[in-house]
Image 1 (spheres, one colour):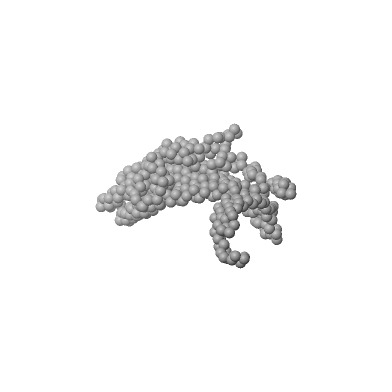
Image 2: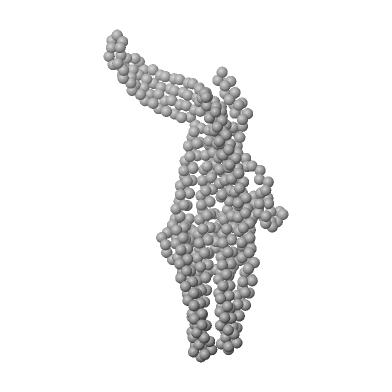
Length: 451
């Protein structure tokens, strides 16, 4: 009878596929996810394949990233989550094994038999029980725990990639602000010289008080911008120190390296996102765990088979010692629970559909971010030569107008316009460099980052 019951349960479980493992859904739009010009045979190389030390070659930046990975609180928390998930996985695996209990006992009773008196007894009885995983609920729970453990490792890498990108972005922001500060200070010094010249020209009757006042006003405006830049530098340093897990302090950055413009924008084939980008992996692990939750909810419709056994020894003072042995099997099927189980299955299926939608959307977001990062880098590169030529022309214009003004061949307004245009172009050049670096960082992050 027991063999028939077990066979029936096995047939039922096989029919509902409760032992089925997760498979990735079809992704027909994956090949055209980037919308970029990729060779027909597929580019198998990606920026994400580079380790962060190979990608970020500035020694000072490398030192900051290493310190951040060691001290950042979020990195420490992510490491602890991996330990938690590993413990949960061990518990799920051990649930497949039998349980063994040891129950020593002492009893005292008052006898009402002919001779009367107290009866003292004692014994020891180990007992074992094992749930036969016929319906696959324990197997699916173990698979879900394994997915959760692997997900924790991906989460750790996700935190690492975000932290590296954030440190690099703050570092290059600081580099940009320092560059703008240096240009503004140099311009402020030249405007102080302009004020001196304009005052001398006024004394010589070559200009008027209005021109002197306007020159002084512009010089003061540039000096005021220095305070704003110094404040922004301090805020950026504080942000960077927070990422490093350190108290606020000054941070020294390197000058811009023009060799960075020579870096290839290697995106790799879109399918690599499925194995590299953390948020895509996290979304798929969520889908995998939701799939196993559905399997567990479906398996709950079938009976649970449990084997029990006990072996023991007992002794009473009024009787000889004896051995106890018992074996049994039970199939539990609660009554009046069908409605709740159907509701649980419906809930699990709905959550699985939500996870599938989130996984699909994570791919679309990843593709859009790759496109945006590449476009930003290309736009910054496209302006590089044009900006250099613009600055050269403006410097020539400033020199020419100053000479003409000294010879009364140009007005003060022409000199002012030329100098303001030069300052604007030089600051824009620093901004273009930052845009390129920010695009590279975004591309590094969008492709999943290297370890």
